[in-house]
Structure formats: C-alpha cells, structure tokens
Length: 380
Image 1: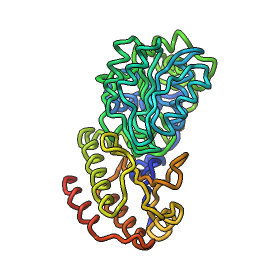
Image 2: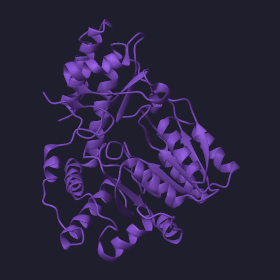
Image 3: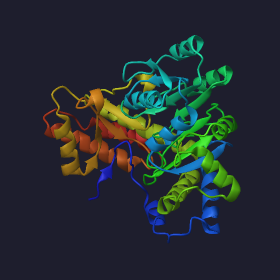
Image 4: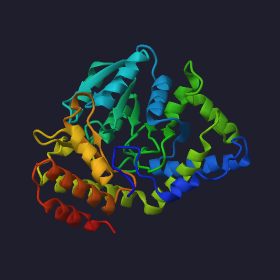
C-alpha cells in the first residue's frame, strides 16, 4: 500500500502531473520554452483571477515570500503584519531583518487578529504596506477578512501583499477584486504539483515600484524577470524545466475542474474532517470563525503522545499527517486537506485516526466514519 500524504504540503500529486516531468528537456532560450512559459502564465492568471503580471520563480514558497519582501521593503518602511502563528511571525521577522519595521497586530494562536486593530495600526502610522499570511498552516487558521485589508490599503495608498502559499486553489482568492498588489503561492500545496515552482502576481502599481527601486540582489530581483519576459518571453535564469512541465499539467487539472467546484470540494472535505473527528473527542484548535478549509488542526486528547500517534498512523496505516511546531509542538496534529483531496483521502484518514485512537486506549466509536460519509455525499 502506498503512503497517503495528508500533511499540509507537499500534497499527493496526480499521476498525469508526475508523468509530465518525463517530457524531454528543452532549451530554455528556445521557442518551445517561450510557448510553454506564455501558456503557464496565461493559466496562472486564471487561477489567480487576475489581469496582473505573473512571475514564476524556481523556488519554494518561502523563497517567493522573501523575494516579495526584498523587492518591496526598504530601510525604515513601516509594514503592518497580522500575526497569529509561526509563519506570520517569520514574515514579520524577515521584514525586520531586511531593515523594515514590522508592526505586528497579534492574536492568540487559533484566532485571527481583529480587523479593527489593523485599522488602528494604519491610523497611528504612515504605512508602506500590509503583509498578510492568508492561511496560517501552523494553526489551521484563515484570515476571513482579506478583502477588507485590500480595501484599507487601497484607501490609504499602501501596498497589499498576500502570502497565499498554502491556500490558493483551495479557497476563495480573487486577486484583483481584493486589491492585492502582490500575491504569492507555491506549486506543492492546493495546486497539487511537485514542490519548486512559486508564482507571484504583481499589480501595475507594484510593478512600477519594483522597476524603479530594484533591490541589491540578482536571483530575486523581480525587475529582471519583467525585463526578460517583456523582451523575449523568457526567465533571466535557468528554470526547473521538469517542474514547469508538471505545473502546467497541474494547472490544466485545476481549470478542468473549475475554481468554484474545486473550492467547494475543499470546503466539503474540511467539513467532513471537522465534523467526524470532533465526535471522538478531538477538539479543533482554531476558533470557528477562523478555521481553515485546507489545513485542519486538532488538539490532542489528554494523555495522547504525539510521536506515538503519528508513528502508528504511518507504520500501521501508511497515512502521513503533521504534528505541531513552535509552541504547539506535541499539542496538536494537522491534516492537509488540499489539492486532490477527495472522498478516498478523507475516509481513509478518518478510519486510520479512529483505529489508532482505539489502539492508544482512547476509546472511540464507528460514528465518525458514518458522519464523514454523509458529509462527502455532496462530492460527485
């Protein structure tokens, strides 16, 4: 039996996407590549729901987030950052390390900072930009007021940058409608491709700034990517060609399903996880109004050992889930509910978790399987 990868990325990758990586290597300074690149950019725009320019980096999601910071932020710039988890903290630390001044608007982990507190930060400071981690994978929370931050930035003349690494393609994110100047995502999460490709959408306003204020770097100098694309539909540096082939195929799958249907499927699977596992005593970590549909976090029952729980799942049932990290290490487990997640993934995961919970003498019933099956009837 193959492993079922239910961590918050990388996710299970469809066979046709994996097979695309067997495409023979082409010259990245050829018409073949130019046609491929233009095709990927066009499809990526559809998934981002944007008319903005697209840059494709051969990098992890973290690399693309860092690229956005070193291109947009200069010494002394004040940047509002909602912080409700480890990735929000890392983002604020990165901004500070680069010379900016991150104004952290914090909340307890599992909750979202109040939008009023973000508005207050704008009133009290001259803000260059707002950065928001749309989906905080460390806590299983999603900022459900991203559109309001976009409106606020637009009204105040600030830039709005969204880290959508773990959520784009799995939940609502109309980039243009929400006034997002730079949106960052990654291939290995809700888009269900192998790791290594990180697209960014960049508004005209942000593009103008980037071109007139290039950073002291080469690989992550985004103005260079604009130059090469505009002049010859190329990348300035050698891209990971097999990953580009795979990403192109993954985008086809997303568009074949349709964004609306894909988002609904993620929400249905998330509901099945929350509803079923709650019946056997696992409490969702995130508050109801902040719960993510792509990363499902649960508190452990009293006395349950994280390492033993996940080891049994892996060794006995070939199901891989994630533990907590930072201050949540050993306290929560996290399920990736993204990409190709469907009935099979949910039912196998719920069944395996129920069995392991029984094995650890934390008694359960068969009720969660019935509840999950009922919730999943909505999926064709």
